[in-house]
Length: 426
Image (cartoon, rainbow, N blue to C red; front, top):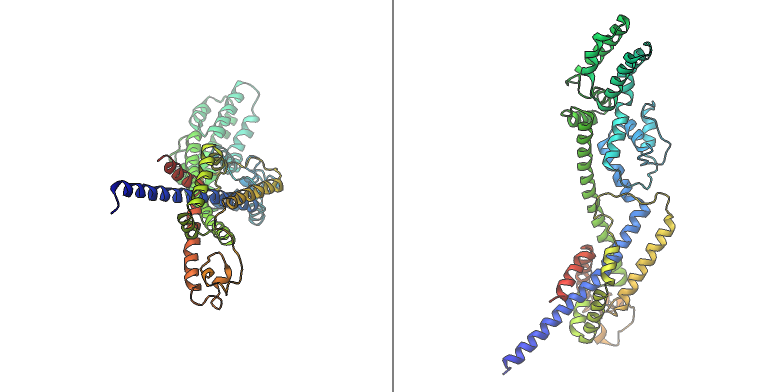
């Protein structure tokens, strides 16, 4: 009969072994997740996935190809590699579509305020000229003096802030020359008539609303009109547009994260198959081999206590974990970055190899050694002719082991680092 003390001792040993196995697996998953993240980032940079996703999302926001081309080529945006197109420049839809769908740049982030300023400037550039160009022409024809300066300041305020039409109307009766007074009154009446078609008050961002009315895309026109309807000033219009853009970017970020999660699964599957990183086989080996388990536990403790593992986890930023962020160098040496990422991936794979776990494939004829037909690392054992009684079981176990590795690696290094830290603090 086993005494209680011996039972408790054995139970404690089993618990320790379980913790060591789980922590050891977590260590492997951390290193593998870092490799997957590095590979994801390398693929994302090489294919400009983030920049393309950004453009695709803005394509859905701005459906008008002419506005797209002008916004994308604006010096403050530069989403595509093409010469800037002035907001008031006339271009055909075919030309605009060709520019907007041209070669994407490395820009993968647009500040909401910058985006809004560019969009507003693009939308109202032509309407500013149409609505207020005649006003400015009449005012510029007036004799120099305080009266002309005051009227021009009022019009400039309307153009820049969307407010001041009421003050301009109130100032008309005081214009001394009847000819100028009549001409200005006629133009303002025309503006009021134009704005009345929009169903808004004449004092509310007249140029912007008129610019929106001229947009050919019905969906974009309706969306902007809805967003702008409650704005009683240009500042309010900017705030509404910023909120609209930010909400859209949040959806784009969620979509991008999902794409990168899918890419993580593919990359993890390729690595797990290529290197034969089989969770079930590793678990069985660690459980049955106390010496290897202790060795892995020592390596893990050293990596955690030295801060080396924490640094590796912190340095590797998953490509889809944050909102869209600016590419830090448009003209960076992409080849140098790719080489650096490749070196990092090779170093991490070497770290996994150094753990001396049952990783990797072999191809060896063991027909005369039946006890070795159950070796899951020997590809020879998976052929029915070579191993008629055991190949199917090996294949099923391998499928489960690789699948477990892929799912674990897709969770990310921070996830497993948190689990390992909790286990080590027990």
